[in-house]
Length: 181
Length: 90
Image (cartoon, rainbow over all chains, first blue to last red; front, side, top):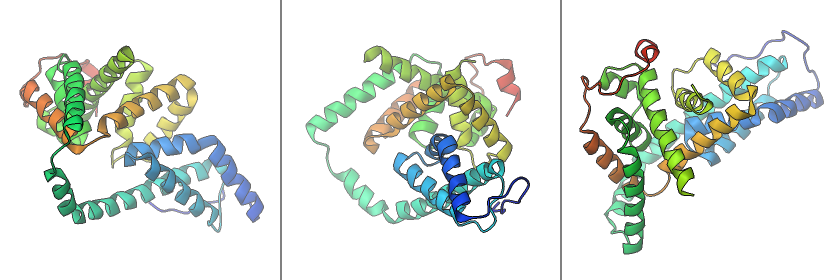
């Protein structure tokens, strides 16, 4: 959906007014916008870049609408840009696979191996205390990028139930981290 | 449900390709409604990102261990009772 905003309330006319409208949107919603994009892109840097692109698109609108409508438009535009970026990333990932395999074939340094192993042990020990569905759903989604929808289909559960299990595991990790720090 | 529970649920819902504008507006209202909500969301998102950071071999090793220890619950594994609402809603 790339619908243009319509004028359903007061309409900013000049570029100064438009810039002011975008500035207000930034002040009121940028924090949420970046968090939204981080959830989609799993990258803070990408989230900030896509947010900037979305603001630029907003500034380029010929007929900006009311502020309330522009908020929806901003998030929709950012969401579309995030999808474009994920597609580009998928193509890049495909192209880079040879390099990735070469990197994985390189042996770890002993120090790196010990650290990685300790971290794996610590997290695993916490998560293994949870019900099996929690650690399974967590591993499949958070670590292996499997969509919630697919895990739900495999386990014959609702998506909400799978989210519940993943969140339980995430909260357990957070609490353990807090307790350890 | 605590703010952390809701935050985690929202974080995962926002990842969905099927997120509709109504849901997004609902999340924004929730996120903006209370600093506790924002803190919970950002804290859990930080945890999520930290767990995914680092070398791929670590993630893979951890995933393999967790999957093995859960003995792949399979479609009939219902060892932990879920809140009834979760069994019925999307």
